[in-house]
Amino acid sequence: MKAPNPGALRPVLLPGVNGPLAAVYYAPVGGTRPRGDMLVVPPFAEEMNRCRAMVALQARALAPFGIGTLVLDPTGTGDSAGDFPDSTWQMWRDDLERGIAWLRQHGHGCRFLLGVRLGAIMAAELALRDPAITRLVFWQPVADGKSHYTQFLRIRVAAELDVRTGVKSTKELRQRSVDGELVEVSGYRVGPAMAKALDEVRLPAPAALAAVRVTWFETLAAADVPHGNARLIDEYKNGGVDVDYHPVVGQPFWHLHERTVSPALIESTTAAITAWVDGPPSRIDARGGAVVEAGTPATMVSQHAVSEYPRTIACAGNELVAIVHRGAPDARRGVVIVVAGGPQYRAGAHRQFVSLARRLAARGYPVLRFDLRGMGDSSGEHVGYQQSAPDIRAAIDALVAEAPQLGEIVLFGECESASGILFYGYQDPRVKGMALVNPWVRTEEGHAEVILKHYYGQRLWSREFWRKVLSGGFEARASLKSFGRVLRGYLGVRRIRALREGDTGHDDFAALPLPLKTAAGLRRFAGPALILMSGKDYIAREFDEIARSSKAWEGLLEQPRILRRVLTDADHTFSREVWKVQVADWLAEWLESW
Image 1 (cartoon, rainbow, N blue to C red):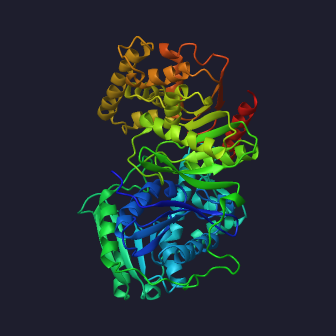
Image 2: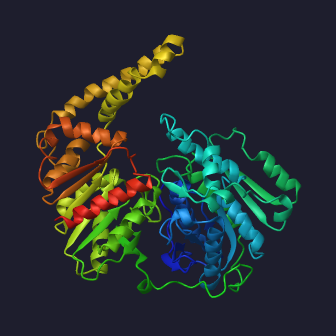
Image 3: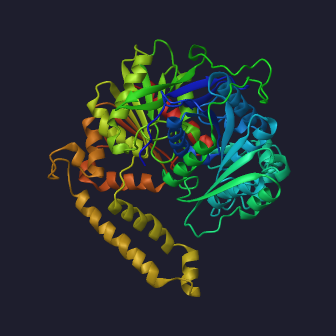
């Protein structure tokens, strides 16, 4: 989906109880009559990542109609100060109230909120505390926090099914919270206070929202699929709440790992909001019903007063949103972190890029993190890692402009972004080092080989597999058909393995097959490279198979300038805290070693 014509994109820092709150304000397009501003109330945990691109697209769609949007990262999330384990529901509510107050002081008022998933409950709470909020927009709202949190905890239970000492139930995890422990799920460490609140919050009773108009959007797989909250919507309507329900057909973007957008939802939301936003709102005093702690006015934090701050970067007619982390003023080496592909923004998978950048900056290295075009908050069309060279070049230019004393740039990237770095790094003399995490070399043939060796091989040794065979529960025809497809793919990988760079019949680097292209990029780059690998990850195994058997990779990883580290038990994104710390330590040690 191509991004609509954007308004002025303005990164801001607001004061929070635990430090600066990062936010992005999508102002109304210049020349249009301002008709009011909207605050986005985000979802919970990984859904923040998965919904971010949709939120940005929606903000850009509203800007030409004179409607501004503020997207704020609550404490411990995104680019804001603090750590996720220390966050509480009340703390996040206070953060968002500061966002409302900022819009009323510096924007065009704030009369309506967009609550996404669990954020719908928070949006409703904010409306109850603020009589100036007259409209709520819900995207796929979660009605009950306890059931939503249970689904979240089940991710941890499922991940440890095959671990003898693993967690066996969500009840066990809840008891740990009661006992005062942090509960870690997919890299998110939830504190006891937040866990308790999630089990208690739910959408308010109809009588409480009688003064608020609700526009409710639900994304369905098909037009004839019954929506899940039908009974609750009927209760609201019967209870006197003005609910305007809009079903739209699309994919569950909040749930899918790959970057997914729903054009129908954006179009329907834009049409609904612009239909009832009538004329510019009168300016509302900062007190306008919002609860703002005394002594913390809703103003902006000066970037000179903080160790990290947001900025925008011009790139191919678009704006990239970035965060700059100050290092030592005399530092000669800086780091540019390229956020990986998928539904992520600058926080990256499980926010490890934030903590990584802060650890590096504390050691004196200036760091810049940014969104590629069409990803996260950045404008433009998403063109993918293969065409990321202009983005990376613009990010390096920006970091050097912020810290002119830098003489060396190190590029850091994970998965697809690691491969994008390999395609770009050798062309830029400023790039002196590369740190690559689980580089992406996937082809259909290579993926088939990994599945054949690691999946089917393990199944043959699995007691559960043979139990199914002996009990008659094994579907032989379907399994053999699937195996045949994988085997054909595996046989096709030999063609690529046999090729060397320069023996492919291609005249240019860009046309090389992906496994050869990544090898060629690393071979052409003369500087040191750090390759960090996960022990439990199919993408890492695909890289290992290619590097081991492809002639293009022959002898490359044995060069003294290349250091390879493997974290045996880690998943693809190094989601656990101990793995994140180890990656940061390895990176810092490597940076200091040359």
